[in-house]
Length: 296
Image 1 (cartoon, rainbow, N blue to C red):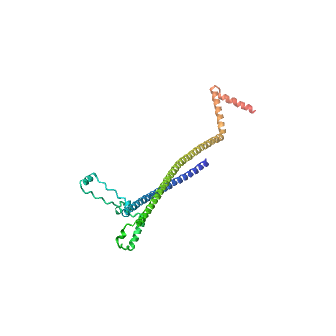
Image 2: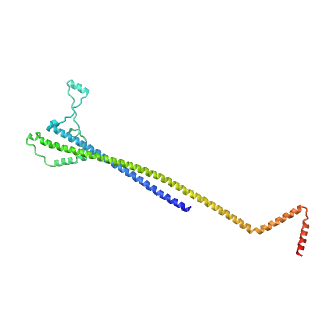
């Protein structure tokens, strides 16, 4: 019984260690999930900022290209959409009134692009270029107005450069989109695997705690049985002790009890004879003569 209890105690200790290891694993898993979530949020915020900056930069370059076309290639120029008048304004203009002034677009140089007004990372090179331009001495002024005449070759070179910038921005937009989708897919896969592992570990903890409770109940049952067995053994030993003492007393007093019993039997016989009408004195005399005869 003691060996069995020791084995169960050892199994309980092993189960406790396993439960502690699983609990520590769940805590570590929760921490890694939290860190991965924070990283994913940071990457997504960076992606959104880069997407907004590149989109605004592309829009700004296209606006600049269109304005260059206004002066160097009017056939390629795309005029801004006309301002739509309300019904009241149309009636007022039809009656000879002056149309309301067009509100100047906000943003950089009236382009409507407002995101790049802040100094994001995408404009670091432009800012550095501007700083170096400010440090350098200003170029000499043009000698004549001929410098501002339409030059098709220079216009084409500038447009080609702008197209190259737009192409670079499109490539970067495509790359960050692919990277964002991959990062999101990896994050979702990690979350699914982490959730499955956490559920499996939690189920394992529940099962091991149930086994631990059963083993502890078994140990308690063994202790109760051992206690009951010990009490029965003690009661049996006490009974045997009392029985042995009683037997010893009977053996020690056997002769005395035998003589006393014989005396009691003799007394009963005499009493019976008296009740039957016999003379007890005559019986004693007769008994005495018999004894004398026997001695002769």
